[in-house]
Length: 596
Image (cartoon, rainbow, N blue to C red; front, side, top):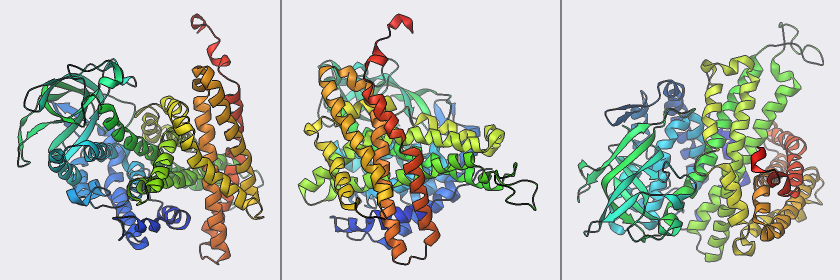
């Protein structure tokens, strides 16, 4: 049976030593944030993930969700776990205190998302979708809508969804057909069918708040004619209590490869009463508030599932006896050596370890900048942080979910044949990880977003938010003898990233297919450089702590050794991706359609 232990030492190291998270206390509203408070929150959060959510992961996968008479029943224990989770205030960890939230930094929400997804990715879908609905209503809802919906979403009494996809359209939302007819009293009747709606129907909360994209009668064609509506499963009364059932129902649930304990629904809206959220025909802007939050959440799914898969692979590799070390018996008193002595097993484990520790730093850096973008008193600093988050969102979503699957597969491979068996738990992590590469915008769409929107935005303003600090770091540390073995590979890869950026910008202006052909490889190249930068920050921090005589000598020296593995065995992929970018569109586009 698998196990999970929240990696609290690694989390604390990134939060306190590398990123100095307690500096968030200087932001308005965060004055009480301290290292002790942060530690208390992540320890309690880790405890509920380990002791409440993780024990339901395999049983939830085996049982799945069941649709009975229009009601979805979640697996045994999920309702009780959800109640415990909600009563602990975890649904509103970073939510506005005005509506009952804890008002903690979004950085801590990012940390919690990692641990929740590692413990039980299916369970995490339910509060995760509620958070997206909260964000959209908090930013674009009327005062009345906020007063009605936000306290209930924060308490967990009600949950939320985002209803975008229809049978004939996924990414191309301009094709949606769901209609919204004005009723003359400020409400609208919603008619249409939405598919792939996570948490669309379930038995965890007493009510479900759907955020629905639909078209008004006078809507222009395409994405400029989309409006956003809030549709409650039960009609809320003025006092917040629930009235009759609304005209929204679950037609069926999907039978999926993974995350089987998460209800993925076909939702039918048959004259459902809804209210407009935000301005008419401006719904996509409001929905992207949900989607951007969701994309960062999905990035943490990739990180979380990779973490739990890696943890179990390490345990197995230390216990499983097979053959002898290539240099001779390591444990002559036993019939064979543990497989962790073998170089190829170490290659698989180190790939997971180097990814996880670098990506954790990158994810938390994004989370910290989210807080700065919302809270800093200086508008220029808010804009700078917002730019960085916008730039890195498609990168962390795509790269971390790709690597979530890759590390899960490598961890399964460590088990050999036992990894293919359900009881060991590894095959579930492979199945669960796979969806994260697909939903909330496939990773190919993330790559197109990077080169098509983020790269040219503000004449490269977003790119400069990342390029400038990396350039400054390289300049400051390249003469530091202890840092050179790490800074020089970063500098070389960074120079190639700048070259790729310039090439895509120049070629893409003349032929958009050039940018499209390069997009996935460019995103991967960018992600590797970003992780290299994070590893340099980690190394510098570890070296400083070692020089100060830290008692965590083994922990810190392991950071340096893992950084060397990343620089020498993983970062070279950036050179290959650079070559693919420079190959241009012709190798992809020259083949005739009939020749496929």
